[in-house]
Image (tube, rainbow, N blue to C red):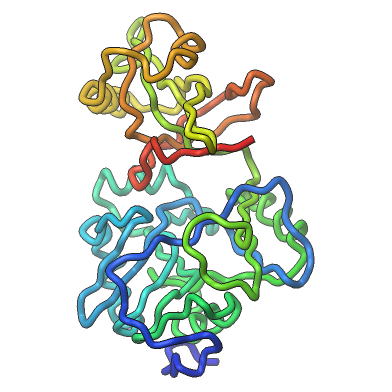
Length: 329
């Protein structure tokens, strides 16, 4: 079918008339150890960027983060590119990425582009459509939502707004190919499942490398000629809401970022540690902060003590709060 054609949303199985909401809680994948096999699964590349809901009501386009923040002003080029392809009273779900030569995406490059005001390599990959022209599609099977989405969006490379393709079946093979191409991983989704806000096992994420988000819970002082901070202290919450110490990361920072982080952390400083057990595990003379900031970190593995081995700082997750970082197991 030709991308950009007119669709009657009432013909999509499971669609129902509904007012376009101001915002919704997106559907999130849960981490899995292996890619599922079988034809009941669709598999997409896991993009390395910012999860964004694009909402068009009348002529008003809004780009909304996973937590409901309006980031339209941060991505004006993406908002402008959506205008000619997005029907009114519609909600897209996707990810804004910085695409490098060869097609790989880089969160670190995206963070730099935003800080420098550059947008030439920013692309919005759309992988779902919970609402279309005054109809709610959340009860429709994923495959039907994606079929309608593919009819709306350009499928070729080069544009700022692109349809996120998928493959059916053979998750292990698709994961191996994505890892060979240095992608972050894949997201596997049940092809017949509805769009369900929150975390659930209808969507699974499988990563090629050990990489995770952590709450920033403090810092250590710099040594020698280093400025700003020595390292960031990292933590995470379990399902019961208990805070755990995950170690510290001291590599992956520029000098400018080290100074900027110190200024932000000092504004969040705590007089006492957030948890006694965490304080006992961390270095002496650590500085503690309210866990409002989240960091993306690459590492080789978890140690038996549940500490990160060889961590490297990738970037701040401006779309996520440290208090929301939950890691089970």
